[in-house]
Image (cartoon, rainbow, N blue to C red):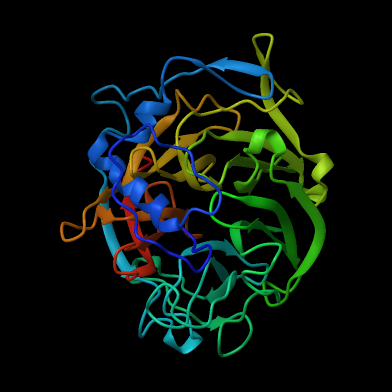
Length: 400
């Protein structure tokens, strides 16, 4: 979870799964510890998944639970999960003056490289250690993902520069955090959340690059923090072959469900052009008020078309793990869709390839396939303030 504000007071492990709301300005250590504590308490998702009606605006839909895969059905065999490499940290990103960072949201650039966009970044290997920037980005020309992603350069020169200038902890906001990046034709579009303390998004906006991420300009697109009942803050988007960009989004609190919007690819910077997917009078349709397509306590999201299907991966804060869904279309019934846990949360000192302490993120790396999925996974030790890094995990068998 990105660093917001310089005060980072340690917080106790939560004892109740019911505490899912986040007060504005709370330290991110509190939120990360809450996610880690969910593994011991049975998960926030159980508390938030009661059989009641949830609503965004005035439209209500009965809450449902994901359908379990039947024994022997496709997707029930054990996944093969392997940590491929640490992608950031001392000796890996030292030359870019960014030893401590998170997220690493990847997208293929128009010129064929891959751009990885990072959140709150510090020069030294500790949260708060020196030069603070966000967002920053690195390029990679890696083609063999199994050998591990390596870096070919940083946006800004020898040292990774903030993608556009602003002062952190200014009177209006504290930091700007990336949500997702998409390539449409010869341009890249980066959606970011402007925050004043954790859990307090003041607005979100879209920036554009026409040179594969080297320089960025504001598009003028600005979204209110309370848009769609506050569920259009942290988003992920994918370009369909029908000319529409599909957008899954949630609040930046790790405590709420996901909604769906769409927008024409040539109007992605027009906030008025986004159409919500909603349920009204017993029918789902575009243009209805947005209603949750999947309940839960959602963190970072990654929606991508892949292998003739669509894939959504996300940090499941309620169950302390990274989950994935394979669907036919973004409007598919996500409760009936093919769903697996990809990487599990774990405890410090008890980690293995498939279990990661204080994990989050989980972004699909370009070059992945349904059966050979590569993810950028973040980790932050809230007690020691290190590690705070991005790792690469390989998941085999997800699409089988």
